[in-house]
Image (cartoon, rainbow, N blue to C red; front, side):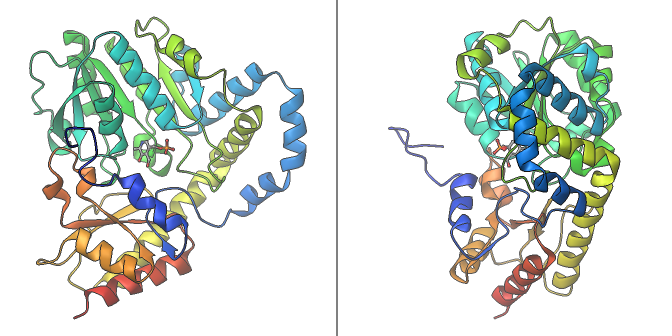
Length: 375
Ligand SMILES: Cc1ncc(COP(=O)(O)O)c(C=O)c1O
């Protein structure tokens, strides 16, 4: 939403995350800021050696190996042979390329999951798309109506901030509908590494349906790699959108060192690292819920396994009030209005707390939240 000269009416989530980088307790952004595991430390300790290895290896090999390691670790075996994959510096860069490709082809009408991380509607809107909100429940039970003229159905699964996931049956349902109506099915699966339930082979379901699809995979939320990450733009080789052309207008490729690191972290994830990460996030979620139990607060997303947790603030308060009061105490959480991009009031009751943090930091954040709610 913006005024007549394009000045936004309110800050976006990333703008709200920025002050948290300066000082205080940062449980605002969803980046991985936890202490590396023993095996992740071993990778980091090998950085000089990996630098030399990356310099000496053809980048096409590093690219292929990073893609193979990541897609295998998250169970996307059919993507290894039946798709084209473009490695980008982040999932937002992949999203930007996708949106520009849509714009180039005159696509304008996108049905988009609601709520979701606000840079997805923002990037699509800036590329000239008209967005129609689609509720999670209606995607799951198949009742979401896609009016005539919808050209893209875009689903974030697992969804940020709710942790909601699109089941295999629901994916198959929407893939069939998209195939029969010529709609492009687009998925952002940035958080799938946190939740085994979204590691079924999406690409076999998509290929079986014969629908057009574009999937944005992402390593960026998973490992404490100081934002050395990639977003993968994945689509069938015969997809007519000019994705490769737009990609090459923006990128030659991703740093060989980043590709090699992604391969190492992904292989580690496949060999037990994901199990360790899931346990770590579960334990942090339990810690937060336990600490806040008894206060007039609840967690609306009981089934969520992703690395962020929404909490509903008590009646009579708003997420914006609570996050502002916390900020004055040096504690940064996100209010949730902006996730509800079509209806910000629907998110007014919630704040979001990042869980991919050292437990001590999370404990301090929980205590500050409690303190802020006491009269
Ligand atoms: C679902 C989702 N997709 C994409 C992004 C953008 O990620 P990045 O900043 O690494 O490009 C985010 C950021 O939080 C996200 O939550």
